[in-house]
Image 1 (cartoon, rainbow, N blue to C red):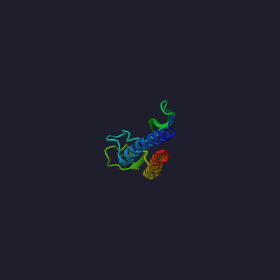
Image 2 (cartoon, rainbow, N blue to C red):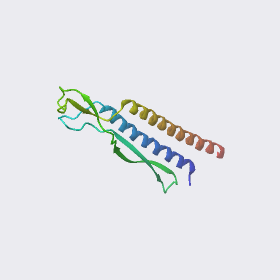
Image 3 (cartoon, rainbow, N blue to C red):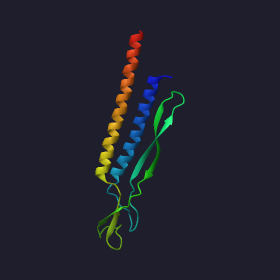
Length: 136
């Protein structure tokens, strides 16, 4: 078993999973102010990434995978805007259940995790180089 290769595969899978997470966060942020187009229509619903692990039989590495992307079941917020085409009879418009502050925190966490995986990959590459230097 190539331990340093397994480190690289694990780190790469973590980077790929965090990239997918960042994409979903960006979609959430882009749709934070969207509304339904007609009265009573539901707006965009926040999406959340679920992670899992997978054993790579070839290298013995434990890989990170995105197991599924689910919709957040929290209720929509209501905003008073009687002139909006999507307003209900009371004048309220459903707005997405996206909290931009929460999304920014998730974005920062995903970016830091991505960076940690990148550092792990670089460390593995440096260790491989040191072993080659010692053998040569």
